[in-house]
Every structure is written in C-alpha cells, then in structure tokens.
Image (cartoon, rainbow, N blue to C red):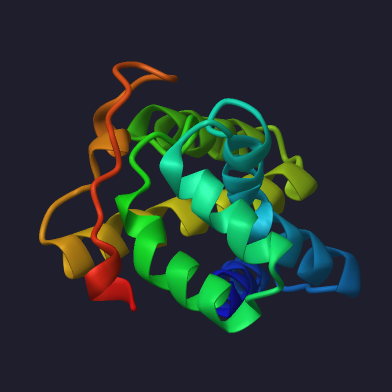
Length: 158
C-alpha cells in the first residue's frame, strides 16, 4: 500500500514539473487515486468472491483475531487471486484513455486521480511479472470472464 501511495505522489510530482504548481488538494487526490483500485479487493471479499476459499480463510483469520497470520496470508496469497474484476488490461487502457482525455480537456483533477490509478495498475502488473514470472491470468480477462480456482498450498505459507 505504501508503494502505491509513493507512486501516486510521484505522479503528482511529475505533474508539478509539467504544470509548475502543486497543492495539498492534488497531493491528497494522487494518494487516494493510487489506492482506489484496491477497492476491487474489498468488493471481491464482500460480494462476488465471498464464497471462494481464499476469502473464507481471510474471514476465519479475522474472526479469530489472527492478525499477523492474516497479514502474512494476504502478502503471500494475493498474487494468486486471479478472479479480481477490475485488475485487467482493459480497465487500465480505459483509465489511460480517460487520463489523456482529461489532460486534453484541461481537467487537472481527472489527470491526477486517473493517472494515479494507472500507476497502481502498472505497478501491480509488473509486480506479477517479477514475482510470478508472468502476468496473473486476470490481466487478460474482461470483467468476471472465466473464473479460475485459486491454487495455493498452506505449507508454503505457514
């Protein structure tokens, strides 16, 4: 999460160099925009993915107040969650297009917010390449598409 905020702030700094101004509103907007895509994870846990094993494990860890184990489980397992609705190249392309349209329309708030969201998705995609050696299958899927089982082993995690 901290890395995403940092990337959003770097986006705001880049725009500062372009527009020769920076203010607190833009900094806050960039920080919010950089973590906004993670709402997809919350939607997954509470709606369309709540019946999946990954979510059930997270709910159990929360229920029994196993916070350290929860953090470690999410750190280790979140890259294997291949059923996220909005973490795909189609959404990323739409955000890039909207950022460009905002720039051309001189709507600075849109450029900052949407561009910060793009930084989040770009980082996640490259992180998949680094950690998994390939893109997570959800990047190539439109919407809910073909659902896949999440494969993970608890012995690697514990």
